[in-house]
Length: 303
Ligand code: CP
Image (cartoon, rainbow, N blue to C red; front, top):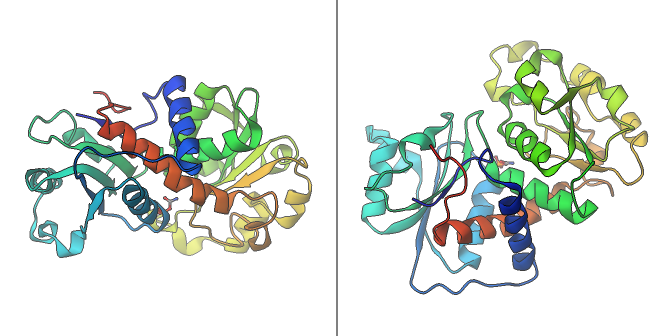
């Protein structure tokens, strides 16, 4: 069963090929479909950019997009994820793009002979976010032309971030030097094998990429005591810290942004910020991912 669910099993050559194909799509390449292909985007967690850019990617590739809203579906009557996918496959859907709050929800859907569909993970709980990771890699590659020796800081709500998990994995593989910062309570020693934890003020003038993460308020049980201004001063990319960045360093953020918390509002669209370009690139990377799984490729998540 063709799938792209995790960055864990993508080798360097595959990541580079997907970025290269995304660049071709950005410059106008098209896909010729031999027959109509139906796709369903199943978002059990909210989304703006991932959901809309997958839909635009599908339409640009000539796929027909089937409307799927979990609240209006038989999921609300208790139908399981597996049975919902079985139903969509039975009626002719060939590509399922799924976002779900459960980590590794996709394990029960992989290698199922009764599910002859291509599967793309659009984010699983605090697990992985491969399409965000690939669009981030495309944006870095466009800016610097490669990854070897590049210093990349991933800063903020690391423990809850599926973006951080996917990116630390792939950045190390691609030859970048990874650093972490943010509240130490939100750092896991298991990240040590991918990079080094440093206080924000020791990092800010050293790195080529400052990747800021959203504080995921919805995943914090003690959120009532959270002080936004205090977080910004201690761990955020403030205007003062941004002035200390290398002149050719870039600012990234997967979105949505808590303006004034992890990132000063005036930095969101400043010349060093790639925030808008990341979202633009998301369409082309997702076109490359969709083409790849429709061609039958198993890209990550092998049991
Ligand atoms: N970066 C990201 O996943 O954004 P959405 O939740 O809006 O899709």
